[in-house]
Image 1 (cartoon, rainbow, N blue to C red):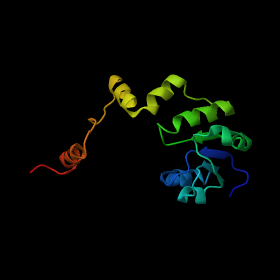
Image 2: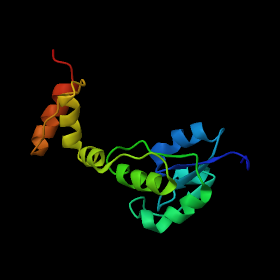
Image 3: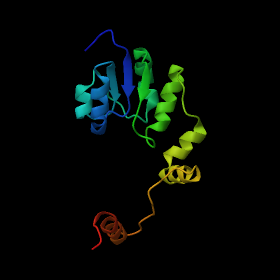
Length: 143
């Protein structure tokens, strides 16, 4: 660990963020927030044992690190805690209207379509049979 490198905070610290932590590690000291041990919490320089939604439980620890930035790869669950942390640090943060769009995947999809962004076709499956039919239709080539 480079004791001179600036801190960054990654939320959450789940296993799917291992590659991000490995990419950041040569340049920064990396702290992750996650209540459970994962591959990512093991390789991070600091593990903050907390649920990312309980910002009040760990915000003082994050502020004490004085991180250069806080980052996530998630747009639904983590976007609100990320904004709260960034506001507490005096960093730029999404406003509530943006958070409300991205917290709801349907609203996020609809907003992207309204902006003209290319989006894959999507629909709600109401039964397991509809899910199976959609998977077969989209994965198995027709003969």
